[in-house]
Length: 143
Image (cartoon, rainbow, N blue to C red; front, side, top):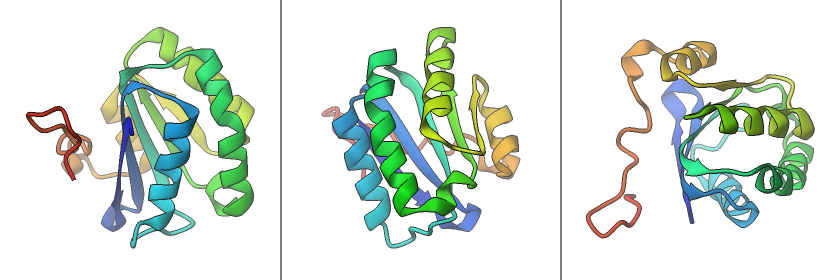
């Protein structure tokens, strides 16, 4: 899977770190992993790091039905904050399109980590919450 999921229960936020290419099947697996997490709560904010991915408009649109189904099962997620961090202008536009088609009431796209952290209400001391969600020497995802 091209996504790592970690729940930061202390700060009320689920972290999704994406790498490589974002596909609908990976998004479905990431949401299932989020739901199975012992710290899962319906009201958790979500923070997706897309700085290391290739993401097309077609791929974003393929994920819209998954997100709508997730919102149907967990309507509280529509009001929870959902931040997407991107690394370039093309992904910024793709992420904005994705948000507009999913039905999230409280979502935003950011190019800067500090702005996303502030908008989510995470303390500055958190630093880069994705920093310890790397890969090991074999290119495998750390647990």
